[in-house]
Length: 93
Image (cartoon, rainbow, N blue to C red; front, top):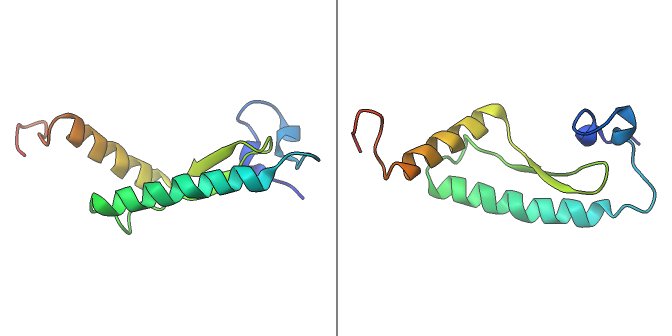
């Protein structure tokens, strides 16, 4: 089996292979919990349907959460607006 989630992040192609003894289930389970929290928070912000966080485990078992580029951009826009206290660049709320 090949896990492409680790390829190109820290090393070479060997990072994408499943390694014996690595607890991928625990990593994926932790990522699922985080992804569910992200999706619930996104829905609270009115981003349901635009943001879909998906759980994964890297080749070394580290839990990661993937987002599509549009979802990540929408989260970034929402966080920026929140950081500004609801103010846009023009000073509108």
